[in-house]
Image 1: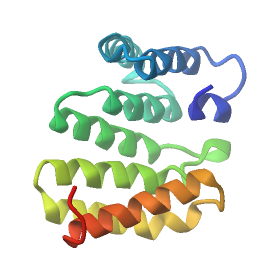
Image 2: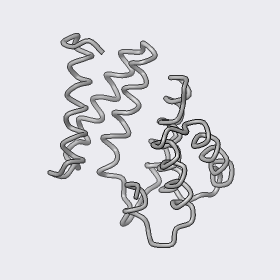
Image 3: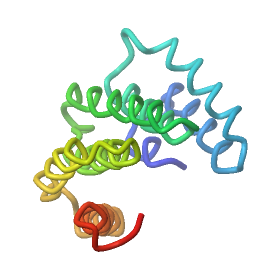
Length: 154
């Protein structure tokens, strides 16, 4: 079960389809996963729920071969998170979403933009829980900080 499926109401057909595509991706069929997610994006892009658009764009980013395409999808996920409210509020997602965007900028050699997004990830990190997910995001923020400072090779 994907993170998105755990957070969504039971019987959510869109999240079920996202989860199926994610399983394909994790099983090694990146192209088919990307195709299914892209088709679903076409269906929900304009009037889909912000949570669906956020999760879908996040997973679409993971299936991209081109770093610019990956960044574009991560930016879409971050933009969709702005529309989240209520039980699925994005507070705990935001640090990771900013981190993904920062990583994308760094891959494209845009260090200043990466630093800006990393600062936003750090600022939002207080919303992370004291759990494996929060620990992982905090560790990734530290790794990217060190990479941008030139302390480690990426």
